[in-house]
Amino acid sequence: MTLKPKILQITQNHQCVDLTLSGDWVIRMESGLVQEKWSNFISPKSFLFEKCRFQIDSKSKWDSSLLVFLLKARKELSERNIGVDFSGLPEKIQNLLAFADARSTNRRNFGNDTLDYESNSLGLFLLSLQQFSTFWGKWLWSVTQLLMGRSYMRFTDFFVACRDCGASALPIVTLIAFLTGLTMAFVGSVQLEKFNATIYVADLVSLAMVREMGALMVAIVMAGRTGASFAAELGSMKLREEIDSLRTFGIPAMDFLVLPRTLALFFMTPLLTLYADVVGILGGLTVGTQVMDFSSLHYFEQTQSALTNMWEVYSGLIKSLAFGLIIGLIGCYKGMFTGNNSTSLGKSVTSSVVVSITLIVICDACFEIFFSFMGYR
Image 1: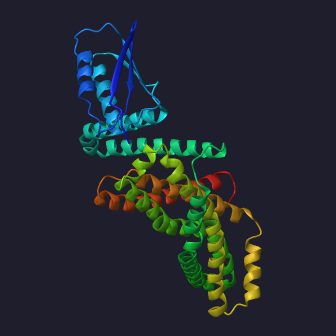
Image 2: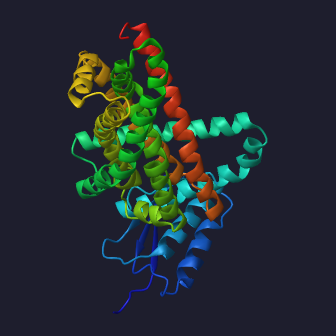
Image 3: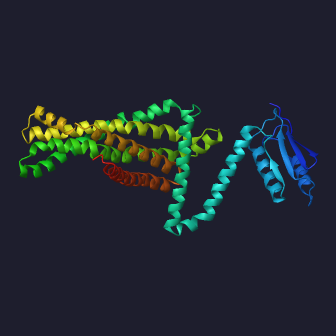
């Protein structure tokens, strides 16, 4: 394939200069004449124009050498207080220039502010809060774009994430929920037996599971299983610069990577909570029938009488929605903001689990206070 030499055409119009790029701006083509012409153009100490507009021939081929020239030109013009207008360039070139600016700004801010922030825990906390607020805002915007039908999210990824968050988690959720119901029945029977009211073990287990323990145990399991997985996956992608590659191609990482994972966890957690409630009640049934010699029918009747108010079930499901959203956002946030080495990846995974469980407990307490204040208890 024959390549055309690089050409830089300079045309001055009053207070503005038009810089037209033609030919093939690729690395293989020599740029000595262009560099000489640019040096002659930029060398005067005083200029009679205020702005430069860049344009490129639509038939020109280009690669990273064009971006290098544009960035260098803008830097030299900015040092001379001359405005730069890239609006005449193709959208792909403008996106790449914006991406280069963002990376440069992040490196500069990190280098200047790291010591100041790490010198005190308050500064580090404020930095993390600022980053998460930005992350949360971008997530809300992505959800809005999805509702408007403008999102880059692939529903295939969403269904795969639903399978990983839902069906694949059933074995561990089954084990934990069954043992939780079993343990509560054993502990409750010891105390209730003092009052000859062991049948109320059914009330204790059913109400505790649907109100608190079902949603809470599922959330803790998902934080250690799925939230850590999200942080590890996205953190590894960042280390391998796959996320930067998506941005280079103009694909928002929030839509493509974060949105399907968080929405899948948001919808699957309530379903897992309902399943855990049933399994926990079966765990209590096992103790009631095998240890306390209740009949299955008697135990189920007592459980049914305890759950006449469906708000008991709804309150647990409302909590599980919030828990699922917390786990998904924290896991993806920690993965997206992982550092540039394997040590930081390990810290991000650990931090995602610790922060998620802490926020889950705080959120659960806030829900209980709110429900009590509103008279729902």
